[in-house]
Length: 175
Image (tube, rainbow, N blue to C red; front, top):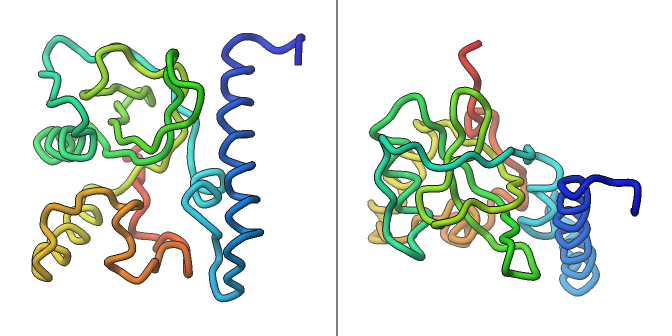
């Protein structure tokens, strides 16, 4: 690993951490009817690596520890931004953290929650309309405060782990 750049080492560390967790979950909680053992495995298969850029000065930073809310609200207001959920690796945290951020039209990750952007982002960019439909269905069931698509998927009986992401869940670049 000594021949890898620092960024490649960070990405390797993030992916290895997620793979180790996925392997452990699959070993402990074997569910033959599920496509994925956990969201770590889903993100490893379906996610995209994104390079971080600072939050533009035209966007206001959101509340601390409210990454899902902060990112969703900006994605809903700004059509050029795409909501992403996955895992991030911060400089001062030795493990991957479940997190949400935004994807710019240029393909960069911008983080409206963390003061310092993560050193590595790996996540799934979602269609805004699909995210809105999931949240609307949750709200109808009285669960409007459960914002994370992945972490709160128990409300949909872990449909994303059992069947994978529906095709309309993915953000499709207009280009």
